[in-house]
Length: 137
Length: 122
Length: 110
Image: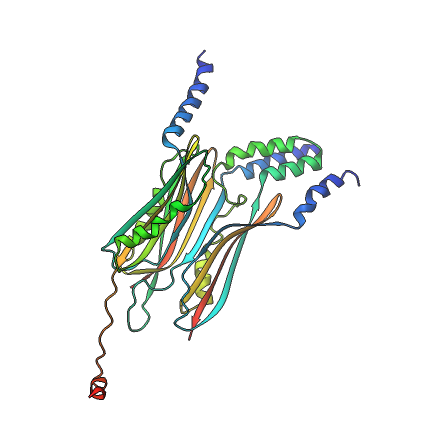
């Protein structure tokens, strides 16, 4: 039981999650041509914090080797980062076609594009959220 | 002797190249709808440089819209590509926002062709 | 168990360091209203797509011209109005180097 206590304490804050807004952009809003019906599109991908994974593994195995291995991975993930690293950068490409599914006439206005993440310490959810309005007669 | 020099030479060359070239990164990009009439391209940019990247205001961005409007008097600015960049030269950071677009003049609305309106006036 | 540990750890390291890690910076959907108002029935729209990359070593670069390349590529594909722009900016992470990518999808109104 005592062996698992540090592991639990390390994980406990991550159960709640920490939300971050990285980018927000707002397009024009035109309410002149009909009733506005809201829609929201939400796509996500799992992000990984390699250093945190190494730290948790080190706590669990009571060995610094895992942290050292995680440090070895860092030069292989060199570059500018927004949120955690993901393994598929095309997860948001479906948004373009999904907007048409929500608004088949393509009469869309008031688009808000958000890049967000919810961090659970070692892993995270990396989101793209697009909210907008369909113009209906 | 050669073994000790080469890593140091490589490191100092990399630092020198970085100092001269800088590290430029794209912070944000956005594009709006683009018109078919692209005969009047527009370009405006603003920048702000600070030591150690310590900036005390973001007012440098304000002339950007005015400059685009100056290049397109009484017209409509559309097809705007906006890039926000940051460049780091050792201890000096430059922030730059570049906007390119097109100036469009919409045709005036057509006069009414209905003769009934004229008859009612008489 | 110990005999399996080292291969497992090495496989995890190889997986994380395989060069298939990315950072997704920004996604924007905008500009669905036509840039040029025309009377009559709605116009036919065709998907167009442009992508541009920039390889950077040790973070040393002096420009973001790849964005302009993607933009010009999109303009070249369509002589009419371009609407419904979806722009993605991401980076493929690598060993002391990375590749920035800007990808634009849009509708071309003929």
